[in-house]
Length: 230
Image (cartoon, rainbow, N blue to C red; front, side, top):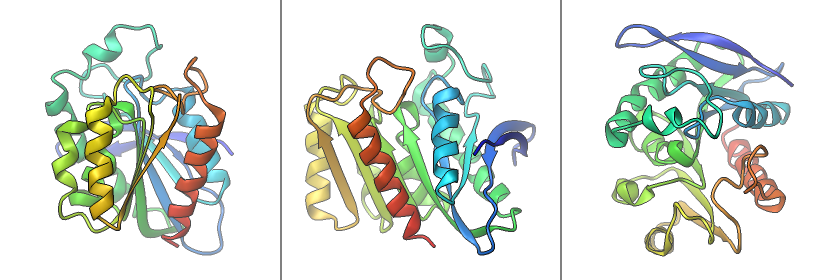
């Protein structure tokens, strides 16, 4: 199942592109909004959205970089890292995009009003921020980067939040994994899965770090969380 690009009006003015896949359904269905990796709404992100939509969920991938250098960029393009700096400021600005995307989903007749936020790499923090204060019903984070900046945001979150990393992820050193493991041990709604030998970017089929087993687990777990929203 393949989608199309739509324009979403930003509440602050302007509009941004969003890849949107809406399966046919006779009943209301849940949605997943994907916060992309630093390379943007590329082939890998669109393929994940297509796969989740084929499972019966609305899938949306907004362009989080429309304020700087819009669109997908190749993995070897230095502009990918540059366009998201300063990082904390860009993540904060992107919260509006995630809210606007959720609002746009409300115009789709099939949408049941419940959406999970699935973040990859750069987009990982939104798996916390979405349930924390943006109206999302769950969060899923796959090989999130620089996540130590957001571990305290988990305090007070009541929705289901799932984190998945490889223990060979150079963007998630041991102190990150230990911090999230510690919170998962004390919070029933937080789960952490660590795959041995798996590298950063394991979800990206276009990356040499792609790992089929970790990918399959992550997609299965995402589907289970989304099923819980129906």
